[in-house]
View 1: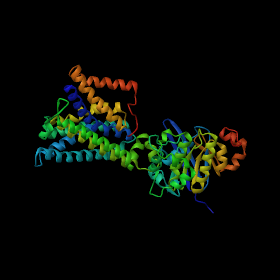
View 2: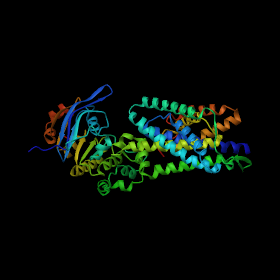
View 3: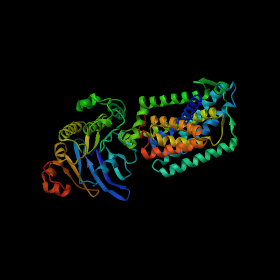
View 4: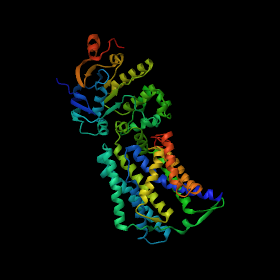
Amino acid sequence: MDTFVLLTVTGLGLGAMYFLIASGLSLIYGLMGVLNFAHGAFLTVGAYATWWTSTHVGGGPGTKLLVGAVVGLAVGAVLAALVELVLIRPLYRRPVEQVLVTVGLALALGALVQAIWGLDARTFPVPSWLVDTTTLFGASIPNDRFVEIATAAFVLVGLLAFLRYTRYGLIIRAGVENRAMVTALGVDVRKAFTLVFALGGMAAALAGVLSGVYFSTVDPGRGTSLLIYAFIVVVIGGFGSIGGTAVAAVVVGLIQQYANYYASSGLGDLAVVLLLALVLLARPAGLAPKVAH
Amino acid sequence: MNVVPLIRVHDLHVHLGESHVLQGVSFEVPEGGVTALLGRNGVGKTTTLRAMLGLVGRRGSVTLRGEELTRLPTHAIVRRGVGYVPEDRDVFAGLTVDENLRLSERNGGARYELVYELFPELRTRGGQRAGTLSGGQQQMVAIARALLNENPLLLVDEPTKGLAPLLVTEVAAALERAAELATVVLVEQNLAVVERVAQQVVVLDGGRVVHTGPAAELLRDRARIQALLGVHGGGH
């Protein structure tokens, strides 16, 4: 029982990270039709900005992490907004070029991070209380798992409230359904594009911070490795659906953990790919396609 | 005295894939009333409206009160005072009726009283998702979105398509009311509706304008209607 509880909470923690990356990816594709392969780079840059800031500010590990995270999130948002304004906006009617640009940007940013800080993983500032464990149904669970789950839940509720109750949320929900018709109502949808990129970049950077806490380190390949799972989550959840993305992220995180433990170590990834294949066969458009709520 | 047209379309060309859909469309729409854009299926009526709004790539000139629109993005054209009711309604199915209307609001002063006066049902169905409405109710939402703001020009694309006769009458009445408030360019296949609401007609064929003139004059000439539109006249 205690092992099952540990696996479940750890799977939920992993799912929380997947959700944070995938939510931005899903909205960006749902609204703008842009397959953003540079999304993982927002995570990596956000995580490194957090780590770098934490090494340059005073205080205890908690203060360092908090200040670093604020900077990391801001860097992620600004970087994403700049990418949209400078690189994506001129290419809105050219999807092939968009893909090439985002792939190139992902490679370039990864190389830049390597060139500045090297290939070796850097130790993340993790306060001891996050490493400590809490006993739940007999299982000793590291506290960071609860923080990851709570953070993702907070972001999920915040995103849903933003989409439901704000003017921009209304524009995004409508734009996911029919972008051309939104412009035909006199709405400058480009502002929503930039906002969605910035929010997606911030969420990815937050995933970078949490992944740093989860693994206690950050390395240049972090964004790329997590982006693969994020894409799987988005495909399973349905492009443009935040609710579908959340459900898919939890399912993928749990299946990975259960398969790795109960079947064989390493089978988790295979199980996720099998799940993807099954969903594509049964519901090609994902669990909740093209509805931004 | 020369009357300055509200909108002037000149030598408009549109290519969709390999097809040269509009091949130099030119016409003028006077201020006030309804101008019906007629023609057989596939002659470019819907494409003309979409090109006027910048929803498809085009070459040529479209001026609204003398201002060139083709250099502007779609949202800026609409903000010059152009309302659009698309073919097939294009309501946002996942949004409620209220949200569909709220999305259309511009610069305050939304005319909800007018919209609810024309379509009282929209008030009672405000919280209902537009995707669950009937075709007629969706058409009401689509027209209401265009009427919500004070637009001097409305582009209305086949508003009675697929509607039951009773609803066609209701939509025609709404168009008449709309024409009291704005100039309407109407794409319509139902000649009874054209006869009821339109003063001018522009007939397209093969991506070109082949006839312009008073609506009543054309609708009286059954042989001409048969030749231009491939249908029998008489309003049905």
